[in-house]
Image 1 (cartoon, rainbow, N blue to C red):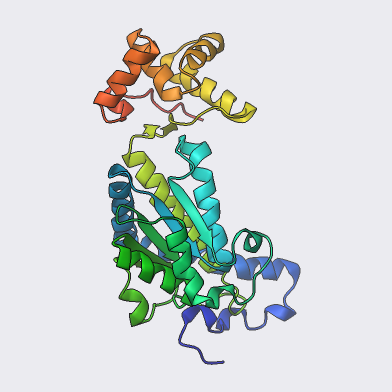
Image 2 (image 1 turned 120 degrees about the vertical axis):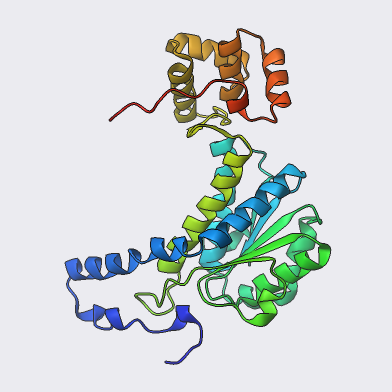
Amino acid sequence: MSDSRVTEQRNPRTADIDLASAAEIVDLLNAEDRLVPQAVHAQRDAIAAVLSAVEATFRRGGRLFYVGAGTSGRLGVLDASEIPPTFGADPDLVQGIIAGGPPALTRSQEGAEDQVDDGARQIDARGVTAKDAVIGIAASGTTPWVRAALARAKAIGATTALIACSPPPPETLAVVDHPVVVIVGPEAITGSTRMKAGTATKLVLNAITTGAMVRLGKTYGNLMVDLRATNDKLRDRSERIVMEVANVSREEARSALARADGSVKLALVMLEHGVGPADARRRLDEAGGVIRRVLPAPPPVKPT
């Protein structure tokens, strides 16, 4: 079985996996998984370049779009959907587009990744402009739908990037400003890119969006202070953060959050400076939203 794509090659280390015991299968898979973090780290500079480009996109009022098919598309949609509850961001700020549309999230849409014209159409349908950034996700580096979407985004003037786990062909690289190629090697099961390639992709996406949000001032130290309490778990987390940072009781934290319309960041500034919501918001705006410029250093991490 010969294929130039690394993700489609056979893995000699798992050639006899069909004869392995349950415990041996776990060991074989875990041994492959341990290769992923070092492969991601090898792309440190490339990932940092994408992170900086995404931060710049957000600062100029642009949006981030992920485009992908199959597992790659699902991972993009997943990352996009987690940004609003984690960082209190507008749901439109990061968007995931998957080949085949919403039905492809739960059921494979065979052939969707080959619908080249649809890749470009989806970019137009979302109203992508030169202010935006589009990140293609294609484990093999060759997905036609992703390449078409990136080509359309590039023609519009948007910033483009690609996350792949096999060297992309020249025609794809030609429409990509920032390539990130994480070579994790052949999968344990040939071509099953939901495995190592999927894990590598998730790690890269985590770094890009988390890093961009941190750079925008969405955290205070490593505390999520721009979240909004929309359910019981987030309400509890919000109250605990305010209690720890401001050294107040849960009741005082709850009261401050209520006056701050659920904003942890606003509540902390109000409590620290003894001001109302309007004055606290003004101080944050003057600091570019970076709470570290308004408050002293966060309390040290308590030993566990």
